[in-house]
Image (cartoon, rainbow, N blue to C red; front, side, top):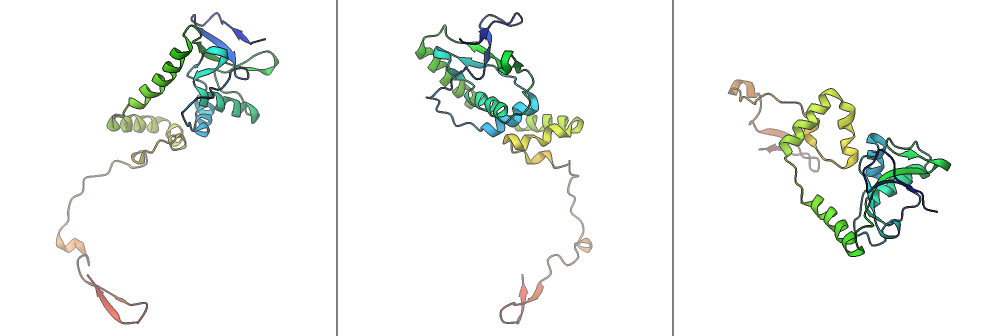
Length: 191
């Protein structure tokens, strides 16, 4: 028997499904970072529904399903917004795509991936948001590296403008430097 029910607080087409009864799409061509997804699920909870189609096969969210199963198999607490059902099953929100023919389900999966790949970041806005969050909750921005986000500007404070100084402040800068050659012992001048 399939564990499948419509919750009174969900819209038509949104159902709660047991993560144990959904089937991973064996033709999924994406290579996801399941460990990063696990960290995100543990930190932020389950926030994006999976989509399933024919024969309970997941169309979108295969790596999220893998992450959820890994958390459960490791005996860790269920993420926020994952519902524990009778018998300890974990239920998550899913979009029922069984109204689409198989070919449209596959086309939807491809479109979902490709459309996400088309996005670009406005780096200035992104860095401004990260700084804003970091000022209030530094613990949140410290997780970004674990999610594969490379943002070196996070750790850099605003630097004062550089003002060149006069020759008296330069010290030995620009003067030749002397050192002893480690091989022959002769003193040499470095430019």
